[in-house]
Amino acid sequence: METPVVLDGGDRRCVLLLIELRKVIATLPPGAVVHLIATDPAAPLDLPAWCHLTGHDYLGPVPGERPTYAVGVTAGARATEAASPWRPTDS
Image (tube, rainbow, N blue to C red; front, side, top):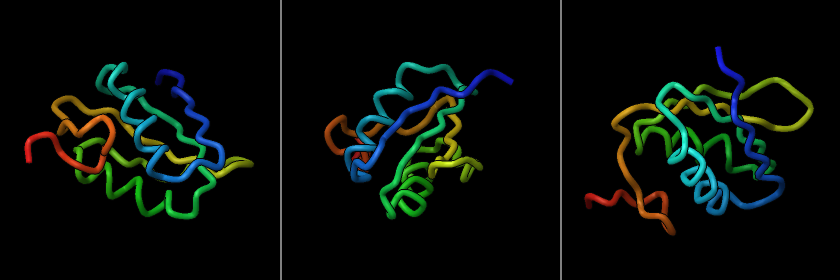
């Protein structure tokens, strides 16, 4: 298994986290894994919902000192708007 790409979202709100996550995922091949560090209390809810919307795989929390969540990049995921990653581009 390849080393995950780490995205440190720090204390940013989920809206900004999703914008950054979308940018990072766009540069990665299918099968890659992103570990998103996020202290926003909405992250455990928003990340699975975003993955469900887009088709990427929400792999769940990652054990560690800081709240971290894993997302798997999938082929053929649904595109979203750059500034509004919760809005599909095909709607």
